[in-house]
Image 1: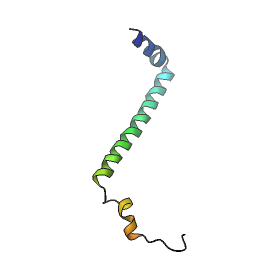
Image 2: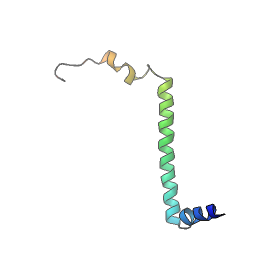
Image 3: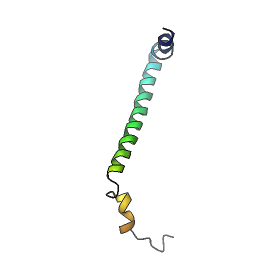
Length: 65
């Protein structure tokens, strides 16, 4: 029962802390979700994306060095 009491006193007791916790958790979830599925997409499409084939089409000018 003390675990639930601690959670209640730290997160749910004050509305401002609860709303901040919800926003923080949603931003963390969004970042983890996008990072995970971008990695899955990149692994499934390796060799088909511009970042993988750019070296074939873009030549390095001598002025850029």
